[in-house]
Amino acid sequence: MVAAPKPFRVIFPEGFTRRDMAQRVDAVRQIALHKRHARVRLTKQKYLAASGQRVIPGFGTKKRPLEGFLFPATYDFLRQTRRPRSS
Image (cartoon, rainbow, N blue to C red; front, side, top):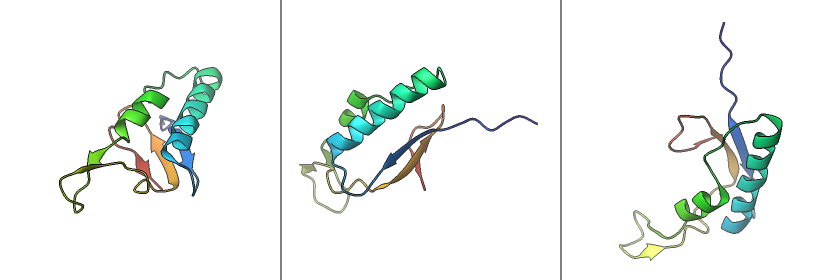
């Protein structure tokens, strides 16, 4: 039996800002690098870029910051993850 791959898990508690979330991504990334010797592609900078201003469906055509649209949750990222799975 082959073991399921271990996810890169990031927990965002309620009240975290986008910058707090980016700091958490960086902290968990460092743990993954040092404890599991895992090469994690998600970085603080990539998180900030991905969570920056976007056109949000249902909120017009103007780009808006995602602050307030990012939900507190546990997100698991696997090697092939393109979008996070939340639980």
